[in-house]
Image 1 (cartoon, rainbow, N blue to C red):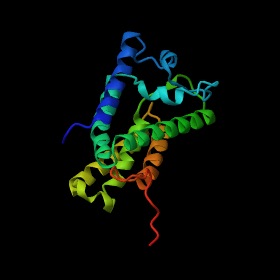
Image 2 (image 1 turned 120 degrees about the vertical axis):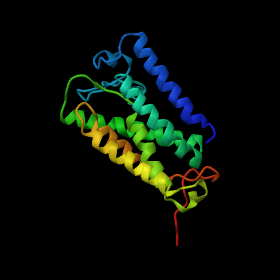
Image 3 (image 1 turned 90 degrees about the vertical axis):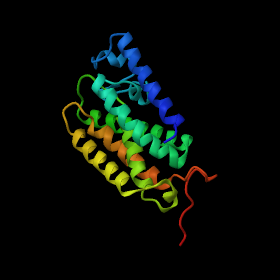
Image 4 (image 1 turned 180 degrees about the horizontal axis):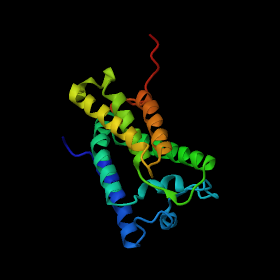
Length: 202
């Protein structure tokens, strides 16, 4: 499979964010990561809306970043090949934002201490979109084989199970998942001049 620029660029950015954590001795400390842009667990942004983006560039530890990078590089390339870099980036960005909003809603109902971080909301959006795209008939030229579909379903199942482990944000995963499903149905293929698919009038 040839190199996919958008996915690899995002992976590098996530590594840079993690590098900043290491250099500033913030890695592994949820409270300290608030200073780098994490989402506060009390559910209040206090006007700092940029946190709805910056939280996704931060990760708690090596396990967190490695798991997210592995999934990103796999599903991101699947989506990017089918809809192009700009549209794949849009799916990721919207999923990150909706995931962040879902996390804040959950925290506003049940406030806690610490923070929420990680790119998994955006990656769940890409995973959901990939699952939709590999079943769409207009994407049939990309080798949507049975093995790929099974792999994506297995990955989704594992992700859902992990969402309910202690310290994992099921709200963020759910927000990203729903965003990816909706955009997976709506987004046009990369060779289409329209951003969204034309409604089926048949």
